[in-house]
Image (cartoon, rainbow, N blue to C red; front, side, top):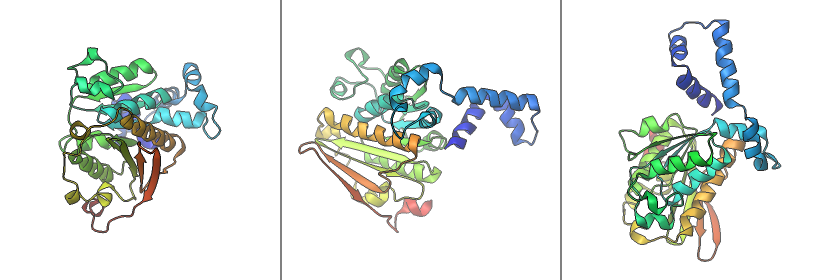
Length: 291
């Protein structure tokens, strides 16, 4: 993950130097020192950041190194709805270095019941844009970008391939299956959460693990009517699942932990119960076979 992130930063900050390296031109000592000094400053925590994240750094098992790993991380959030709003805000407050938000929808009055980044003044505006501004106001030390587009086959590869982890909080099966397939293709970890009614579920997909289609074969889950827009959702349900999703993401990025890899977490908001079920690879899964 560190090499992927450094490579991305070098490509972004020093495109001419990267081009010269690709065509076999050796850098002189001055150029090497310039890049090294810039990268060192880019990745170290400033004094202000140390104060901002001090309550995390004080934790047993979480130190400056873990916090610096968050600063290095690139996270893609697909969907700026009930789950995406909360996950994004928690990761921004925790210090994830770069967050990219993708959503084509605009804000409607019914969204305000559970999508905590928005107010009545935002009605009619793009969710991704307003959420990105909200995150930047919360934490000026991170980078936030957004795209007011729908995640689909035309942009999926470009959006996913440079990420350290993808968070899926969308509300339709078509997008979930596509996110799963593209993350497996590029071996980018995926943490997916969903919420409907009083219940939610979450799981993690990694390069060598079973995937979403192993768990839910596509032919068995084609009913797009199973969405909160059509079936209803309590205001707190997506916030609960988003908090769990963000928490898992911090454990993964900061500590390298994968507690829900190839496991399905089921949360029931009526009786406040939680179960975790293991699942295995489907030998006939077309996504796993393709990768």
